[in-house]
Image 1 (cartoon, protein in one colour):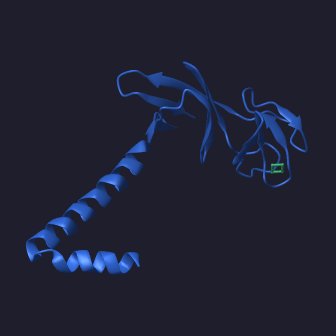
Image 2: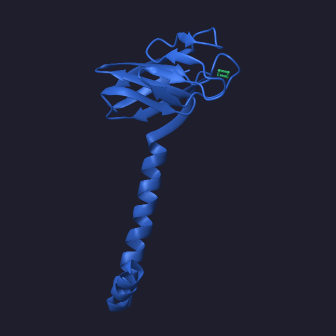
Image 3: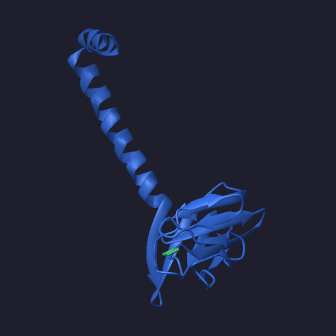
Length: 141
Ligand code: FES
């Protein structure tokens, strides 16, 4: 049904309107893609990886592949998502705990300390600060 409506709409457009609409859609798609990429720019700084995260998050946890960010008001911490047991990527949070999908280790999300094995060591904490000028969290590790 929707396709019929779209096709009927397209048939009513002049050639110029059609190409203008098509160009707008293409430019819009690239703008969205650029925004997504710019949101997670990676760079290196004296041998360390640096991630810039645009986030309006004021409280909570977000996962960013190599690390997760815990924001509580104006403070934030970042921890590696590499599990200290056998290196799996941690990608899940529940009730303030981050959980490894491989063997079920659980870590306190705010300290990185293990609360349930088999992992015995804490997650690696990364440096994290908020850049007022760019309004980005800058994580370095
Ligand atoms: Fe995470 Fe084993 S790799 S619990």
